[in-house]
Image (cartoon, rainbow, N blue to C red; front, side):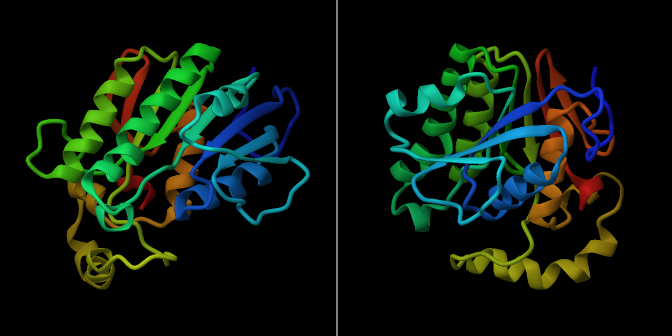
Length: 236
């Protein structure tokens, strides 16, 4: 039996979570929130580099993300998988490398999660994701969503944040301009348009945990069997 409390462990099973992308702005905030959440007994973080976090519940694994033989054991006895992987074409260096990170890797992780019988898979996508889009970024995100849903995972939650606010380690000029304009635009983004409001990484992380634990009362979107797609205007 589960509870709505995030700090009490009474009458709650000790959950284990596996996080990919824990060094990014959303992933790091997600790790911090999971580690502070009393429902979780173990939090695993897997990636090419260390997160720099220290906590008794945290188990870090430095792995070759291209090697499924290294990745597969990480899914053993895990209740929830969180995928926060993502890049830009500029950072990746080419469209092919961008697709490898934002499409191919999440699909591989989804397949590994299904093979391991992982009950819950939650992933960050983006507003505007559409497999039929003429915009390359949106098309890749949409194809990832479509093909991840087609795997038939027991429970799949896809969150679609708008512009991420806050600071990044890398330079993204387009985001910087959007962040400058967002305070002026936010009062105009009401009703369904609120999904386009800029959102803090911590709020995205909060939404991911909520939906993974079936507490997503403030998101909305579409559901298809075990797959649900959530926009996050109510978290912004």
